[in-house]
Length: 235
Length: 371
Image (cartoon, rainbow over all chains, first blue to last red; front, side, top):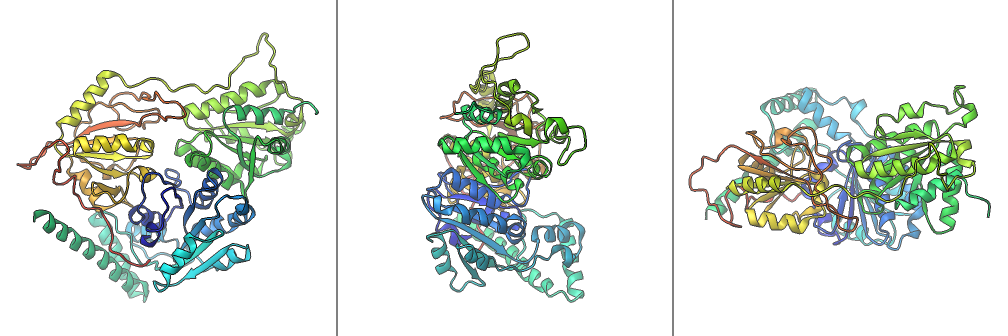
């Protein structure tokens, strides 16, 4: 998200799907007036991301577009609507159209809700999303695509994507165990998530340890920042 | 050139309302309209974007308006399964208050009522998503007033409307000049302007509440998108920090130090703190419904709001504040919310100064990490 923020044009058009990707967009993508950004805000339906991106490009073919999708949404209609993109992109005055797929192989928003609200380990067959070669599919359609599996080389890929001469699909393999910590959690939710994680740990779920690590990093990090800022303000 | 069909009439009438871009998927139930769109495309008056699934057409028609492509979105779908598929995309428009007209094909008139192929009770099916206006055309001389009402209702109520067209009716000769006679209503394709400006007393009352605050917070949403400058000026005048609802994210630069970022479950801690610690809240162009992220409630001050204010939280009935035209969009909706009196002693009040807890609240950035 940081890398993308630094590369957004003043008139960028951003489209976001619904899922944990929405959280990263909300908190970590820096936007400014002059850009447009939207999503299915009240219906909160999966599947809005790529249609919104296409509509934004049709409305203003000279402005660059960024679509942020989870892999669930990409499989729901993103893969097929890439065909629409492939069909139309040559008519656009400016070819910049980047689709970022946050590929964490999970319907992770639902998974976190299950942990927080029901205290349950997500049920694999319901939550798992198969890994699909999104970048390869893009290339088969005559578009550009790259898969990135870690931080190495990410900067170079982001730069290539945002300046590509054709629509670009960035398959970003990401960690499903990075929790979205809400700004305020109730004690119930903490207990529930802890219970679910403990249960998962006991059942040998390797994700459990990572969730704890990432969760601690998130909360301690936020607390440390808060302390540092308070100290700074009182100086 | 052969005389225009009902399909041609529908397309050209929508054009008068500013709708020239059609998202859709053909089928024999909507053939007459699709052919008409084809003729308009050839004449350079329209654009047709074929998608892979009618649901996408609904989303795209919604986004066509959201991204400033058209004042009115149009989704074109065939009877039966096409009509069903597009519903989810239309609900997206409805719930986000976006004007969209659905042109929906229907089984031929003679076959209706026989449980025919692709025959569904579309008026009933659309009675929720297009509850403000849905109509099944049976005769060519209905087209003008039906299309006008569909467009006008969608635009003025910021909602979804539907025109259902049996396939045979689409191919019939158009009646472009509606007779002046008994039983004929003449409509115009001139968009109405939304009513008036807020009452002076309401404005004065809101200003009084805002001035009384010592830690003023602002929540800005999609309704404020056309008012970045005004919002900035008000925030400066009040010394207020601003949190943003998701659909309004681009109204202010995320990097400004008096902007706390997103609010709510997907929001930042500073936004949460801003809401909990303020003593007056100004809500501009937002209907964000998650009350757990609002200040602890005292008595809400009287408010004024634009056309789509929700049921909750308004002490006075909603009124439109718009005096805008299409070029200069309406001023945003504003509500004032008075919270409990602050008990902290020595809190600075200043015109445009920094008050601890609002201005200067750190931007809620997460540590830099790779996804």
